[in-house]
Image (spheres, one colour):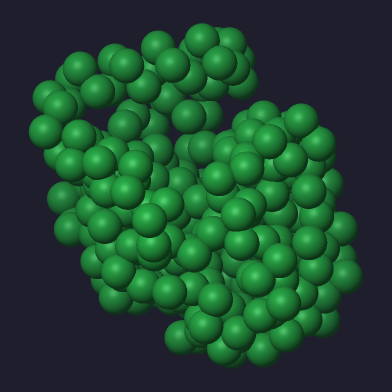
Length: 250
């Protein structure tokens, strides 16, 4: 695997490319299980989003984020890739597909099938304020402890090895909550896979609405998986991405 300043890349140079977009407060390293699983067949690329990891000093704005994703697709994927995003990354994938449909061979939207406006975003508004106020060393220690408790040392490693970026994550939450995403998904003409954990009930709230909006959409639910489905059930997640990637017209 090649490490650049802001993204990791592995796999054959001439293979179809998959770009993975991470969730809030973590980094590109969360995709290590999928990078390891898929690199034999695909060109796999995982960038940091603004406000996170190598781009920690860059304020998170949707426009900045999408421009950076487009740059990575151009630089590392010859201008076209299957874009896979989880949670915050899922919303950015929808933004990217709506703005750059010619660069997106397909979209996999994971753990982001809820429209982020309305009364149900009140907890996330509270969360974003808390993330801005809690001292970062304390927040980082709590996140590390939580992931180790839930996943154990081996499975938690991709989530904790890159560190945590609470301010960037808080900005990402606020930016997402300003927008509606069903129209953005409807604007994208290519194939879409909604990939959700069966136990991620909060982020599956509107999955039927999102599925109906996608012009060429399909839905897959991963049994026993919660929100961070690629870590909860890494083999099932990777297999779903692999099968979808094989099914689309590049």
